Length: 65
Image 1 (cartoon, one colour):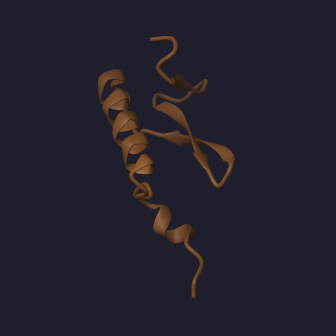
Image 2 (spheres, rainbow, N blue to C red):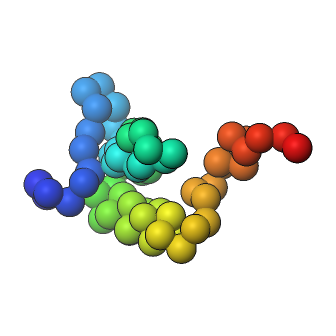
């Protein structure tokens, strides 16, 4: 479990991981209590970020132009 990038916040049933956006680290909830599902979600999000796609829900942070 250690070294895989997943962690839990006290009193929260969900798994979290850190994601770097615009040079700053941000904690992201996987919204799942299953460790295996959280690993899959983290892997997918990191792959999407490498390919230049924003994680779901990030469209709200886009500037309006």
